[in-house]
Amino acid sequence: MSSTDPTAPSLPPLVAPGPELTAEQISRFARHLSLPGIGVEGQRRLAAARVLVIGAGGLGSPALLYLAAGGVGTLGVVDDDVVETSNLQRQVLHGTGDVGRSKTASAREAVADVAPHVTVIEHRERLTSANAVDLLRGYDLVLDGADNFATRYLVSDAAEIAGVPVVWGGIYRYQGQVATFWAAPPGDGGAPEGVTYRDVFPEPPPAALAPDCATGGVLGAMCGTIGSIMATEAIKLITGAGRTLLGRLAVYDSFDLTWRHLDVRPDPSREPVTTLPDDAAYATFCGLTPAEVPDQDPVTPAAVAALRAAAAAGDGADPYIVDVREPWEVEIASVAGADHVNLGELLGPARDDAVVHVAARAQGRPVHVLCKVGGRASRAAAVLRDAGLPARVIAGGILAWSRDVDPSVPVY
Image 1 (cartoon, rainbow, N blue to C red):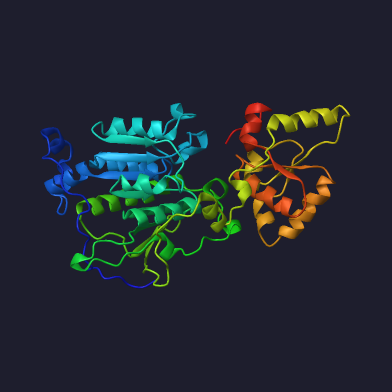
Image 2 (image 1 turned 90 degrees about the vertical axis):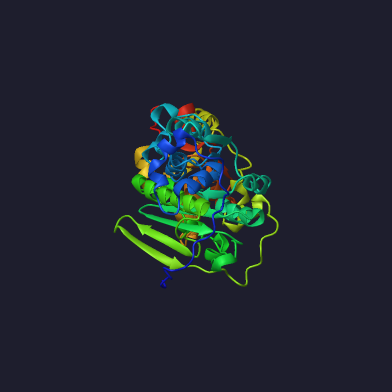
């Protein structure tokens, strides 16, 4: 960690002022209007701004609420997921009544309740190489709250091509990180050099060392801290107020309640991004296997249950099920008779021993791999197939098993 220059200049405002404020806007945003650096003109800039938020989850939730409350005129939301009960611990945009609904629809209604003047554009789709650049070009800046490395690299690359800044946030367990990336910020007035996500993170961590929040957990309240900082960065970029995190990475440890700021610089050896690779290339770069995009030969929970029933009646062998979730997940919900080998064992240094264990337990039977939804099972199945074992993913994981086979299995 190195020191930073507190006198470093601000960036010029990102967005030109919109129309004069109405009486209702003057009343609503009175506490902004008296702030140095924002004022009436800054509030007009916010009203004219278009901000794209990737993910209506743990980080997108507080960011969207504060951007809407702060007066940003247009908010785009990219998310192809639906609300699950386990989201409610941290994704404060959504309520119990939203479970099962599209996250973008839930986000739109929550924003409308806070700030009915805001235009919310739902992008109920997955961000891909095919749509990313065009999507980002329709906005002044993007907030990246994605929960996976492939999407983070895709957002960074697309933003570099589109020429828009990115406010990025990441969370895991008790720690969060925030930075502002911009490949080519305005150079007048001594503005800092551009830096992108790829400059700071040239390569993703090994898959075995980068579990997602579903596996490793995350403190819900910390999402509010990081998401609020992301919204603050966006407001500063739009209005030109204050000093942004461009050139710095802020690291927050909620367990110790500490902040660190690390200087970050562009990598002079990095080739500029001019075209996007396809989605499979991003997956491979991040240590994912082709089987994850998606698994090519999944088996339904009902089919596995039928094989078990037939075996119990003396017709065929009992199917072997290996559960690759974490031990705490298995304690909450499990399939009777399933073997447990967590994914870290199959991806880490103990891989060979784990494969031998699975082969010995399977005893020649096809291997049926189970996780919560299917992503981790795809990675495990690919490892087992590489080792010569016939492995298939149980589609939909334990959640689908509970829904389609055994409703007594808890959903978490």
